[in-house]
Image (cartoon, rainbow, N blue to C red; front, side):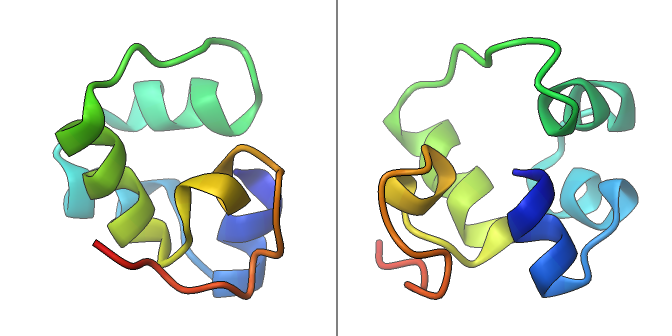
Length: 69
């Protein structure tokens, strides 16, 4: 998540505002200090905010692959 946010020049606040998750929650996820328990809709919302695929968020593909609902 840190790499994606950095490449996209997104701040924790940007992602928080786009997803509705608290900045502290986004910060923990960015620092890999907690694993989110997200359903498919919530995961889609996070990927849309980061403009990446679920696979990129999980580190399984290129971060250049854009979000596709």
